[in-house]
Amino acid sequence: MNYRRVWADIHLPHMAHNCRAVRRIVPDATRIMGIVKADGYGHGAVETAKTLLANGADTLGVAICEEGIALREAGITADILVMGFTSAPLLSEVVWRELTQTVFNPAGAQALSAAAQQLAQRVRVHIKIDTGMSRLGFLPQEESIDQICEIARDPWLDVQGIYTHCATSDALDNHFVYEQEARFTWVLQALAQRGLHLPVKHMANSGAVTQTLFAPDTNGFFMDTVRVGILLYGLPPSHEMEDACRTLDLRPVMRLYSQVSMVKQLAAGVGISYGHLFTTTRPTTIAVIPVGYADGYPRRLTHGGRVRINGQFAPIVGAICMDQCMVDVTDIPRVAPGSTVTLLGDTSEGIGADDLADVVGTISYEIICGIGKRVPRVYINE
Image (cartoon, rainbow, N blue to C red; front, top):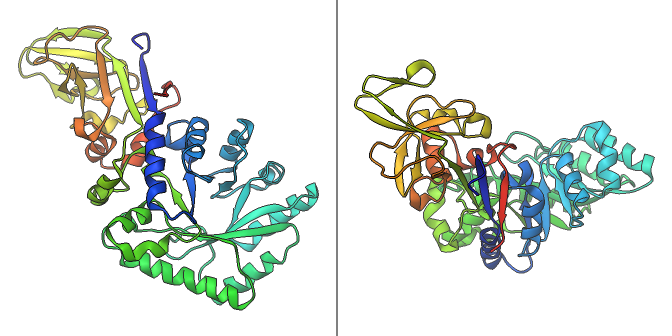
C-alpha cells in the first residue's frame, strides 16, 4: 500500500464478527436492522450492507432516499427503511424502488400517497413517534392517534411498522429510556383500541441494545426489530458503555493510514505551520504527513493529537493544514520518507476513534463518518 498517500483499511471480518455478536444477544424472534446511513458510517454502504446481511442482519436502515437508491442499484434486495425526510421529487423513487419510507406527519403521508397513486403501486411505510427526541415524529397525543389511523386507511400506503428513537440510551442512567418506552406503549395501546395493530414495532438503537447487557429488565426494548449502528462498526455507543460492551468483544472495522512524505531537521525557535501555533524548543526532527482536514482528519487535533510511527507515538505539531500535517519524530528512530503512519487505529493503541474524539471534543461517530471521500477504502476480507 506504500503507493497510496492515505488509505482506510476496512476489515469486513471484524464487521461480520460484530454483527454476529449482536445477533447472539438479540432474541431469535427479533430482527436486526443494520444501519448503513452516511455511507455505512464512512465505511462504504454497499460493502457494509452485504457483510451485515450475510452475518445476521435482516433489514437495512438509511437516512435519506439517495442512500437507499445506491443500495438498490448495487443489487441489494433486502428491506430498506428510509428514516429521514424525502423531498417530493424523490418520492416516486421511494415507490418504484420499493423502499420503506418513514412518515412523521400527515402532509408527508399525503405526498407519498400521491406519488404511489401516480405509479399505481403501493408503498411501504413506517410511522415515526416522537417520544422525547424532539425531532421528527408524531407526538404521543390523541390528535396523533387520529392522524395515524387516517394514514393507515389510505389505500396506497402499506403501513407496516411504527417506531421511536431513544434520546439517552447511551447513558448508564436509563430512566428516560423507560419514560420513552411508556410513551411509545401508550401510542401502541391507543392504536390497538382503534383496531390498528402494526406488525413491526421498534425502539432500541445501539445504546438500548447495550442496556440489556447490564440491565436485564430492559429486554422489553427489543420488540420486533432493533436498529443497530455504531456497535456493528466496532465501537461502543459512549464511554459509559465501554465496560458493558466488552462482553461483545467488539472489533473496530476502520483503520486509517498514511506515509511520511518528508523528514527535516529544524533548529530551536522555529515556527511550524499556519499561525506558528507551535515553535520548536530544541533541535527537532519533523515528519510531514500528506493528510489534512480535507481528508476528514480534524483540524482540532492540532492541539493534543498524535499518530503512531514505528510503534511509537508522535505528537502533532503546528496547525493541521488542508492536505498535510506535521509530527515530531525527534525521539523515534528510523523514520524516513515512506514510513507508515497510523492515524486511526484501536483504542488499545491509544488512537482509536474514541481517543481522537476525546481530543477533538466530539463523539466517535463523527470521527469515522468524517473520513473524506478522497480517502480510498481498502476492503480486507480475511
